[in-house]
Length: 389
Ligand SMILES: Cc1ncc(COP(=O)(O)O)c(C=O)c1O
Image (spheres, rainbow, N blue to C red):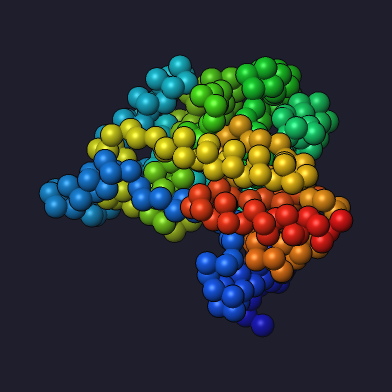
């Protein structure tokens, strides 16, 4: 066997994703793709904003010297400075270009940060339910994942977090707006968390995973984590905001309030390199600085959220309207979410079981599908509910 035992075990733990994917392909071939309603992937189906594509074309056409070669591993200095300026404006915190590192998506940023921070056996806390790949990012760098529950409505349970802090806790991962729940942490929850971190007898870093920051509904705004948490590293990307997930462009930004921020920035630049990323894609770094700061069409997502949530609620599903991100996380009518996902599959609906995110009894439905898919899927959800009862 050439595959390492650890990777073999991780593959088995994540095999449900592959099985679902394969089952989806099989069902589409058998019944026709138009009869299968696939809500599994958080991959925006719309095109990137016009201004972004125009900037990309302009830069390719201009072909300025150095547009395609190596640059400092942390990224083009002018791009990093521009992002630091946007962060100063948004957070009121004095971010500088030196503390911004361009990365291969948000996942690249999280891996570079964890590699720079963790010694073997150090603990990283995640809040349930959580994005499943966190467990693999943490073990990539010798960390041990510890999970804490969130409240019933998926808001922060600061007491539960405090109870799980040990001398080995180095990092707490926050993700607001949240995948899979759509929860957004409030200013008062963040203030309470900051008080806990300040009380701790050793530094604990909050890794604030923010790829959904621009997806907030009902005219709201997500509180900036860096404005409330001193020991904060922002990790984010343009994957969702600009529908650019395949281009792998993101960044991390280290709060200047974090003790040793400069040294950590050097360390993360180095880990970004030795993880094999070297640097983030050159042309897409330039696009992020050149393109107008465009935001997703939230009215389109909000309409799909309402359509899905109201439709399911009217049938009798228990569903909490997400405040942000682009997923709906309804309760399953039976406790066994994997069994219910199978019932849905038989009706042509593909969903992800909540147990994959550490919260059984729920399913995750992605809103990145066309509106029509939601409309046409409603009878299938109703049939599945009837079958489950
Ligand atoms: C919560 C969360 N964090 C990180 C990522 C990774 O983002 P990227 O594709 O920019 O690496 C995703 C992608 O779905 C996500 O949902």
